[in-house]
Image (cartoon, rainbow over all chains, first blue to last red; front, side, top):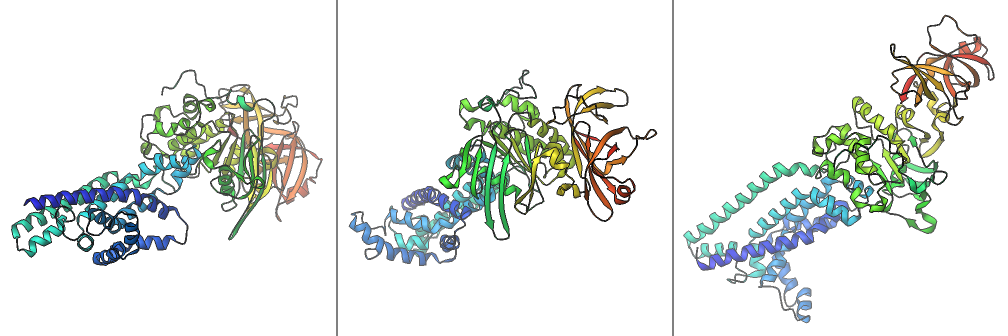
Amino acid sequence: MNPADWQALKLTAQLAGLTTVLLLLVGTPIAWWLAHTRSRLKGVVGAVVALPLVLPPTVIGFYLLLLLGPHGAVGKAMQSLGLGLLPFTFAGLVVASVLHSMPFVVQPLQQAFEAIGSRPLEVAATLRASPWDRFLSVALPLARPGFLTAAVLGFAHTVGEFGVVLMIGGNIPGRTQVLSVALYGHVEAQEWALAHWLAGGMVAFGFGVMWLLYALNGRGGRALRGLSGTPT
Amino acid sequence: MSQSAASTRRLSPMTPASDAGQAPAIEARLRLSRPGFALDVNLKLPGQGISVLLGPSGCGKTTVLRCLAGLEQAQGSVSVAGQAWQDDERRWHLPTHRRPLGMVFQEASLFAHLSVQDNLLYGFRRIPLAQRRIQPDQAIALLGIGHLMDRSSAGLSGGERQRVAIARALLTSPDLLLMDEPLSALDAARKAEVLPYLASLSDSGVPIVYVTHSLDEAARLADHLVLLREGRVEMAGAADEVMARPDCPLARFDDACAILHATVVEREPEPGLSRLRLGCINGGGDGQSGAELWVGGCTGAIGERVRVRVLARDVSVALSQPVDSSILNILPATVDALHDEDAASVMLRLTLSDGSALLARLTRRSVVGLSLRPGLAVHAQIKGAALLRG
């Protein structure tokens, strides 16, 4: 691996780490709302969150580029606030990654909250726990396997993205060149040895992550049932 | 947490807050309309003992309980111990976690991520120090769960889990304890394990509203009884009075019964029979009437108050005192009321000398043959009497 590859590795880890943290913060309230709401908007919001699962990443990248660019609504607003433009910056990559990896975080969390159900929260309410207290002392610990799955999938999916990155970030070493883009560059330049290091490394990473996830959830997944009581 | 030697099974001095005079009552007016279901009840429940809401599934009894808890909202008002929990006229609705109540659900809802001890103390830790009238040692002793403290909640049996859940609710020192069919998820053996603990709860000083569809549980536990049907109150009152009404819907059941209150006066060690002196709770029961009953299986000490169930089908009537009958319990009684059940059978209410009432299911042929009518003095032959509490 050459110095640019090491830089790409570091950048990828930073991007995936930051994206995962942001997604857990943003995705938790969305997942909570989707799990508990009876609103008619539930279907619409759920579908929007799930869109990245079915769309080619280039489509998301394309619209983001238009929206965030100098003539887009968000881009104009950013410029008038003196914040500069997001495309072809690390911050732009983070925004795009958060949107692109959203379903991989929201859906496991939503499933975990739905599996807990309302009963443990009702029990906690009759034991004097306020809504925040119920969330922190009951919902969060019971949804722990869901959070683990969400974090691992969010991180791994961000590491693996290519189309969105290329559209919104370009290929600027040290700023927006992540591993998947660097690999593409090596293949185009027919640097097979370097390409093998990156590609093989990512296969090993992907396998390790998924294996860890299955092993951990196999052991702790029982907590997904929420309560130790078995209703008949 | 050690099981203190000083803690006893009875939690006598636990409600200093409201012991000044008459116990505070529970009042609720609740109206609710949903597709296929309407609820319209007006409840006045005593501020002590166990009030049972009895009715078939779908009658709205669980909805009433959830409205009392604030987990569901109906139109109307709820007040407990003089405190308004809900009052639509003042646009007042106290959220569940601010209501001083404890609730036990149908399935033992222990938190899977907490140990038995942390489950037990979950509510206790959330109430102010000054409000902690019930201490962990007391609740642990009352429910007999001292040996479970070090176990994980997943390793408990259904009955053990439910006992921990009851103790957990008690430890919030509630003004009102709500129980939603707490035995219905348990098999017969587990029911029998938990029932005595429920009966002893009525001595804890905390008023209980208990929802069930089981006549047996109601007979065992109820001090006050409310019959619900299709979202409305069908009949309500002291449990022994409601159950002994021949026109009561419960009297139509095959296991229709009357409840008698009595005091243990003598225990025969060998055949295992005990002599009980009858006495209504309301009538004072000082025993001057002398009506006595022999029952088996009594473990109560002399002087202890017990509750006895007599099934209507186990009572027959004779006009003169039978002298050569195998039936042990033959008591003088007066025919109080007759209620036609169907073409073949008639339900009678008999009043015993102490004022308590019995139900007797007789064939119409016998009623006509003996010319039974209100006011007639008869002898009630009680073939079986089951001890429910004590």
